[in-house]
Image 1 (spheres, rainbow, N blue to C red):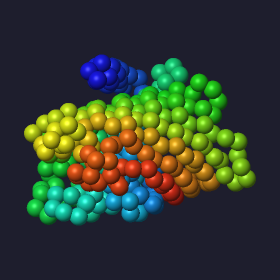
Image 2 (image 1 turned 30 degrees about the horizontal axis):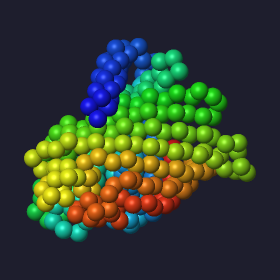
Image 3 (image 1 turned 120 degrees about the horizontal axis):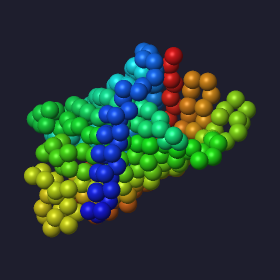
Image 4 (image 1 turned 135 degrees about the vertical axis):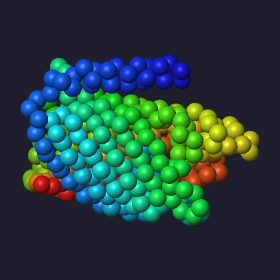
Length: 271
């Protein structure tokens, strides 16, 4: 696991350094924006439901200037029904930079997650920030591969130090009537350390602190599905699952929030 963290950390550091060097060479500066509104049967974050398997409506507004962007993502959220649970809403802020070097399209960003909370827990104790570096290549026409690394520093109750690594493949098929179908699949792995609030799977089973991810401290998640694009609309049907151990997750939010499920969503992007 240490080698994975070293490799991911090296990629993150290299990407941030590259972004700092490449920034002055950006194309002509120009303002732009896009706004995507999505309705879905569930809100799933890295394989875990954040609405207790209930529907979600979210909005992503992005402004761009040259290769820089600022994104605001807003959604309903409801992780559980006791004091300290997240809900009823979440606000994320993304500040990033996109550029291309040779065959690789890069996306470097800093992310901030703010959650409203239930009961007596102060919402400022649950908000946290994270860093991302992603690269996409298109080895053949209509087929893309994306690798992404997320790093979250230790932030007490909000989050222990953790790494998430994702690989995504997408293939766009020939147009089918009015629809443009794209088949996509993703595999991810998250590994969280222990801190003053969160422990590990073994410590939870021994009656100690719960792991960060639904009671576990590391897990694999994956999804596969098809997107159908028509004009400004995108329809998405997707299968999600994780390998979070049921007897560990039952100690916290319950295995029902991280087991297999189908997700259907519809998005419209403006202008």
